[in-house]
Length: 394
Image 1 (cartoon, helix red, strand yellow):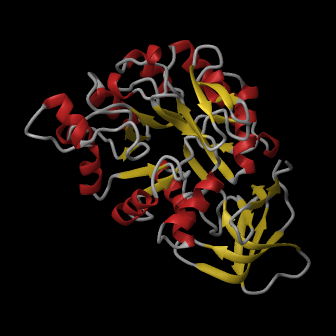
Image 2 (image 1 turned 120 degrees about the vertical axis):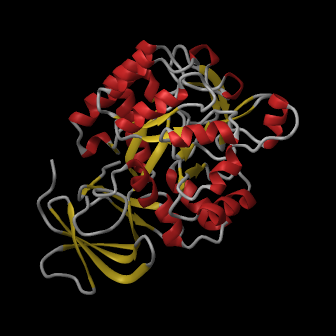
């Protein structure tokens, strides 16, 4: 239920291209009404050091013990509430490798929560990120290899027809990848390439079919070295070169301080800019849980990984997604790069909203948009979260 009363947030407002100290953000009926230099009379004033838009996470697998692939509405709500506590107000639950039945159950659970959403459910669902199972066999990473396959038009056609998928991923070198990209583009999805060992020429064909984004830059993606192992010489250009050479291409980074060094985060920011670089969590079910052994994906069939409380990993193999929220990514990006605070917040809010096609409602503090508002302290920690003008009770 959307609250009808006016609320007024006071502090330094973080806008996409600047910040406004000592301003008042006025909301009414769940939407942003105005930005004013003085408070209107007779309204509740909520004070904060920084007033920021709610974060938008395009790539996230779970949290607080739940994975979206568990395929239940309870799991979806548990994960959504956990991420809302870390400032994410719009979430794109992300699939992994798995059976057709497991994927169908995940989509059904997300549809149920989305249709009956209230603030107590946590972050609102902007759509599903159909991420697995169409990964390259040599780039599956920590995901279960048993559920990996080439794109099947009967499978993905039925899922796209549900109207819930807003982001769709496939490795560009797979048989049927271009048909998948065209179908996803026709359904209005942000079309992405991930878990791929593709060459520049394979990326170029994907681009012609509608692909415009690459998942978690430098993670489970081709490099000049990996393509030399695949093709020999002459050495081939990889996904990295293709993304950096095409202005329309966007990508994302996991800025948890474990996946990428400060130099790589700075390089990504300088090369793509705040309008084409998204922060994502790629968080798994170990978010907000103690170190231990957990399943990535479905609670019964997913692959095993370990968490040390800082990051997920598979012993002897490598990292296995993050175990921290978007607020952590924002703090690391602000600390480790030369991006301004408005740019860092943009990468966690408006830029992903734009890429996913939901910027008319979400991603920035602009009149007419949903009153998804964060109160951050001077350490960029989340103190309060409001969804549609209603405070999240945690």
